[in-house]
Length: 266
Length: 291
Image 1 (cartoon, rainbow over the protein chains, first blue to last red):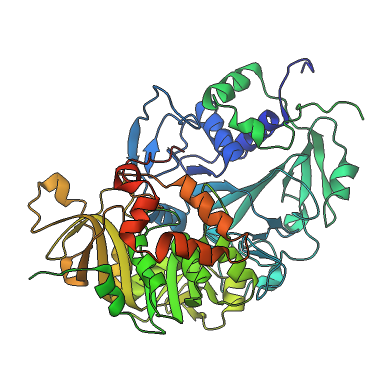
Image 2: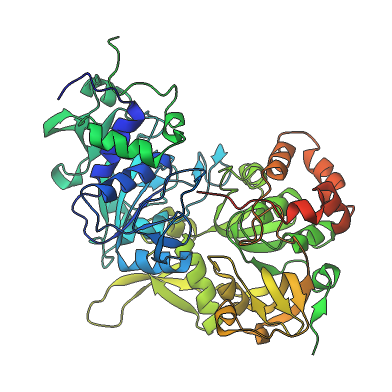
């Protein structure tokens, strides 16, 4: 692929997040936050028209809605998805959500509650939100715009909000087979849990990023996927769709400094 | 039958130590006029049950909350709820932090008068580890699956803000998403609603009547509270007040910030509150957020 195509890191990550939904079939694609939402929208508008999406409120749409002020654009609703219906969808397992947790550990356990001691935390974040239920019921992927040891922590996350592949947390008789952690897209790489016994691996590296740098910024050991390569660059067609879906360039504010997708040589 | 009352009448029904559930979701359709009346009162040591927004934050700031039963607290556009955060970090709160799904499941159990409902949500997380009162149960059928027995979340009082009510206690929630107010109402011994508009007796078309989400026998009292959800949204009528949210957020950064907020917005009463926020002409026309 030509290295001359100009794209930002945010656009590269949108394409990488969109890949997470490939092959899911008719599920509700919930991309929470600007980049995951654009990724889900891109997936639906390219290879996965079967995905269900909402207007980020309570209506289903077959045409993903552009972000921010809409001008003349009027959403076309195809159905209804109140929060009550979302829980019914979640518990029935027909969803693939991508959210940005505060912490993630080597088991894929996630934290959105507090950093530090639970009773007297250093930082209270949002609360566990839907992570316990999402993580045990349907497919989940994660988005991390600031790959660092603060996010990818040593040991377990401070407050296990979402379940993961940690045998110590599961008791006999509990069903683990609905749990399905697919991808983590960061500003450095794409990770998955397809190593031996769901070990976390680096699946692809963003242009100009080395495995050693990713390892250096991660609080636990990483494996290299045998097929480890470069994260695919956005195509011109994908960039056109992304720019149409995000006319106010909200994506540009999602990564500090809005850097180019291909790093300048150090 | 006439259930009309004032926010003062509602708060007069509250006792120290009560468990109170709030309708709405985050910064959306919260019964804020009643919350402000609670802030003006001496009521304390409350167990607050909510999908938290500024209701939770303000009650925490005022020292009204003994225990919080919640899945999150947020202002959405401003992700971190400032006063929840500050009081939570001080270690002052007792907590039952639940998955969002478990929260509504517990209310559902209470409304159906069963001791628990089974779910997988919460298993294998710190939600169960930190709250040993949450027990598991094994399926009595051939599968033998181990599930969480989500206990009923019984409420003493439910407080809900709606678009329209009548004096009999009939209500309409006309925003796109009714959230879980019906379950909050069902879980409580007594539900009080505030409403943008109150009529003597609703006379509706079938299309309008579909916006009724719970029965009037659940409703003990009805308060006429125009812009009573401010500064939260009340779809389809008005959006949240970002300028007010910013002022509120700033109050958590200053020494004496909460007292200043109380003095400016709460203590002088609801009429003064409306004046301070540009009057209901402005408040009622705040644009709905676009996502």
